[in-house]
Image 1 (tube, rainbow, N blue to C red):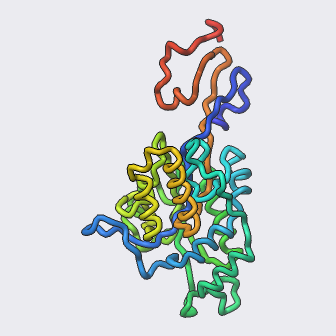
Image 2 (cartoon, rainbow, N blue to C red):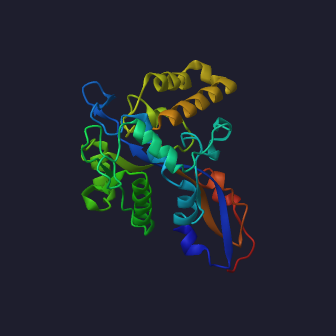
Image 3 (cartoon, rainbow, N blue to C red):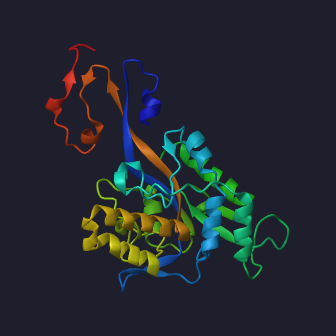
Length: 298
């Protein structure tokens, strides 16, 4: 919105910095157990097989989405998607971004037992029954919402995955939030986003006892990784980086979600403004007396 409203103005320019924002498509593999206050596996989930989740990711050209749909203002994440450039030294320099690979996606779905048995181009489950994945996409008021949903659905159909919007439409933010957080059984996959701010600890969004872990996925390896991140060893710079990077690799391998976009914070600044520091400005650390105006007239 900032870009669209200000890109043609001549009396200023944009100031930017890497953002802590990430967006993703979550795969519901479990549910929240209220009595235990933890995330537990759903044995009936259509997405409990890692191959299926990876196939969803391989079917999508995220570079194209971020360039065309988001006008180049967002870019494709590496690894799990949890560590954008804003996280600094915690970023996993060895992580790569998954590229679209239709043939590999088809092979993984075949191995998972999801095959097109009736020749209509769409896959059935292991019992030969029609397989439909229900996708909860949000209507944020942007024209891009429908374009993004259409792009996903078309890409997934290319590998034989029949995906339909929940209720046949984009959901209001309130409806989306209520139903996704309540583990509505009519939702299999969902659009999501997160912002880490100054603490990129993944326990908030991926922990076994976190209600914000909306895919509800946790396994023994990830649980140990998260314990290492929270351990006293994390006071050592090298060990905390090692712990964060191991989690990044392990999470990416089991793919509880498809990391979609990283973003950049942008602010349009009038040419008269001097000394603005966006790192401070966005966290309210910059005092207004630090700003200067080069002219008293616009």
